[in-house]
Length: 428
Image 1 (spheres, rainbow, N blue to C red):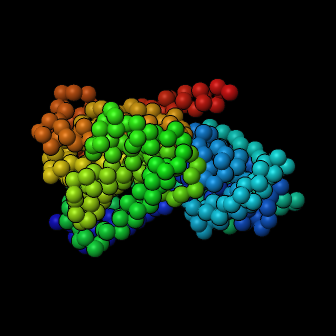
Image 2 (image 1 turned 90 degrees about the vertical axis):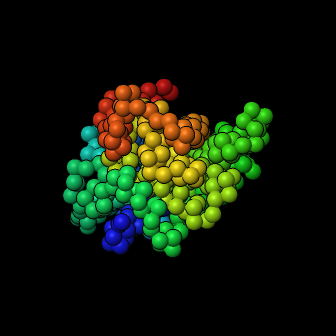
Image 3 (image 1 turned 180 degrees about the horizontal axis):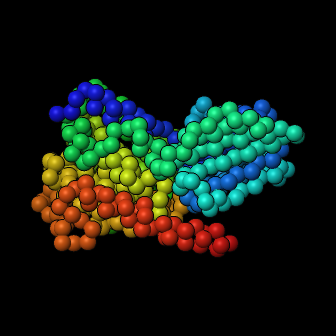
């Protein structure tokens, strides 16, 4: 049984990792850093210079910026300087409006914006912004987490500085380090009143899904599955899971002006950890408490995996969040801890190696693949089927299996990451 102190630490961890975000979190973090540097400068800058890690560039190149009808970093940078409010965090562009977008377009035309790849960045998530106006300049640096400022300067004076820890994970030294048994125990035993805050994720991400079902965002995968797809999938739980999860991604990647509940710094991970659970819970008639416990299990499993994987990597985040969703689906199907572990092993056996080639509208297709696999893995698990330790990277021990997955994503796929970025930046 978990102690109250341990439960409190886990709740604090969830509240730090499951937070609202408008738009893709990488350009949002860039906007946030620009907004903070502009605030330090005290005026709209004449020029903006950015040094960015490869993963930030990769995840910001092809994604829609909410409320703008535009994609990519330039408009996110310009709006960060013009209307960005640092106190909004990853909702930094909350106040975007048509007038601000026109100002942003003018700023891109009339001012110097320099975007450089910092190949030797100390973190996969690294944003270094210098803004200048006349004889004055200011600088802000974000590293390791999307809202974690490690340095602020104005006219050469250091106003704030945090030493790098050498860890990719901002939570490595300060948060409880999870294992799968702890994740499951917390989800099953924490008092309902202490964890029902997770319903905010259901509310926000469902609203994003419905925006795309009713509209036309990204590749419209969600609405296509919900209409044309019923001919092939039927009006079934698997169709609902794929449709509503990919729809929320369509809205987010397509630039809809909606906030979603993120997980571990990723809106798509937050969507993928939420919407399959919400959809299946509705289909199987789960109670509110069962839905809450399933959502906690899904989100906390994703956080656990990300603790050893890191914020950004060459491994697609939908692999992580779909694995969390599969654990939650097992619970909603009536399975217990052994079946949850079996579903996770089934996921690791299937999706390990799916690459991240940036945030973009087609992420909805990867998410649909992930959540359909989550359903398959859960279904196998509750029927006594699990990939054996004789197969691939799966081990008897669940935590070793998870760490095999994350070590591949964190270490073995580094060269994949570099090649993906090279291909993306050289094809135009």
